Image 1: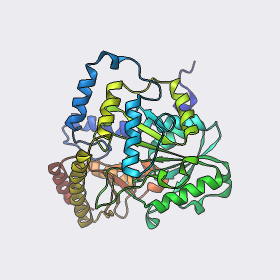
Image 2 (image 1 turned 90 degrees about the vertical axis):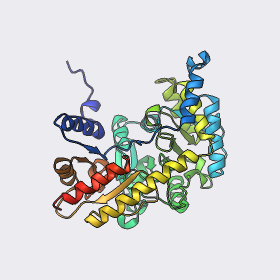
Image 3 (image 1 turned 120 degrees about the horizontal axis):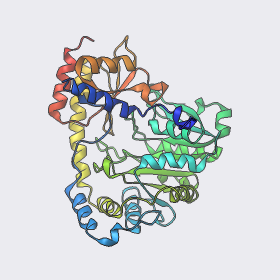
Image 4 (image 1 turned 60 degrees about the horizontal axis):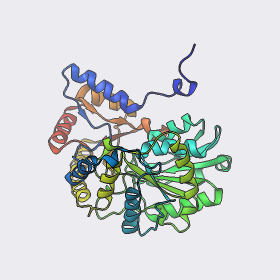
Length: 387
């Protein structure tokens, strides 16, 4: 008897869990590993947020089930954030849904809106959960190639007409994981027009919307006129407020798509622990000074690594957002062979670009999630390598 479904048997292990297993093995062998692979902030959650969690956790009423769509305090805080930050009006009752982190929301959205065999357009390079979620839903993934020459902006004209005609859902992600690319509102204007013309739901993953530098402000796709007719946007507190383990996010936008996701989720979970939702509401209602402090730290790290890498001969552009650098591997190396060299010879974990799709070949992703002293050690080790 087979105890594993075909879809799980054919699902590759999640890349970052593989990295953590290898990291543990190396550390057990005495290697001082520096992990620049996973995009998990090392900075602490701001004190006012966990103090709010502690306060709300003491209230017996908060230990009951949440409403399936999330508590009204949290959804209203999301609406308030969108109004103040983007000038967008959202109905907390019908256009906002609480998520147990945006990762689960993205994976569940795919199952909520496509049928087996349906086509989904996903960015390449792109966040691996798009591809895995499409696989689990029985969909067909058509990759939307992004390239450095075009600034990693989508080229819809490069898609086959037959694929566009069959597409039901499309993902975009800016500021981008893994490429750190950023866009202006013009890119979203084009994307919304494409979606409306071809009747393709557009899901924008805005997990890094608040981590920006050099006075750049990431736009929301919902700022495009009529975007709500076809668009949903995912947000997360994981990266901007250092709350990765808290598992709290949201999706906003088209009410029909959100209702479909809410219906699916109501049969699978009962939303997030209420004190976490209320602490997240406090974060979104704050003055965002904690986010600005985080961004100053990431900017300093980015500038240090950007300068050092280019001096060494590992080319990377200077990003305007995210916690990543997207670096071109030296000649004569593939993404995987160079990542292996860094791990084996320098004890540094980075993510090979091919983990994010075929168009990631020739690049590695470097996370800026260790302190300056550790980055100095990274730079020292890199300079010792024969490149």
